[in-house]
Image (cartoon, helix red, strand yellow):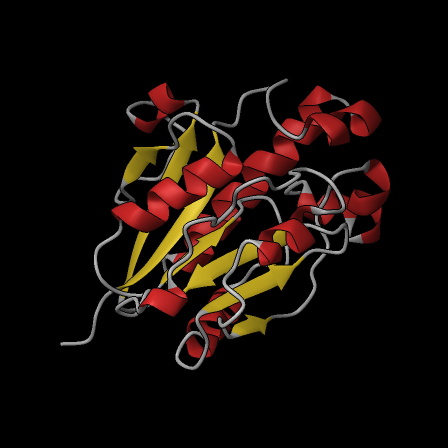
Length: 208
């Protein structure tokens, strides 16, 4: 039997004033919240269409893994837990059962089921796959998780990465073993500023 394919959506509980704070500085707390909630709902609905995939939400703050009327029914939720983003992603990777794992953010409007399928296709011939973002970060990271050989283990995975800045992708790649084959997907644009929102269709992304 083919191992399950795992997709983990990292999501923050959509509360006014607690999401997309950089964007909120340009457009206000309400508009930033509206964007984040609309985009998260779109992404979850989009990725639920994937067949043969174990989809789950990895939620922060942790208490919202057990409550929150904004989460859709039928999609399992688990808490992100403590530590920096790298520690939380590594925890999800190690907790998943056998099979390839793809982790995505919840607020990049270009993420589609087709692009996630492309990530899994890349993992058939690569050890890892990354979807770069225009700002130096990334919107997807995935791992084939084949039975590990000594040269393919990654004890330093996600360590000493400078998150939320232009070095995140470069630093992450530096934690991969040199022998790994790494596939690169399309570069997508995150929405961190009012200008980003306008360039990608402002009112449409706000659900309007």
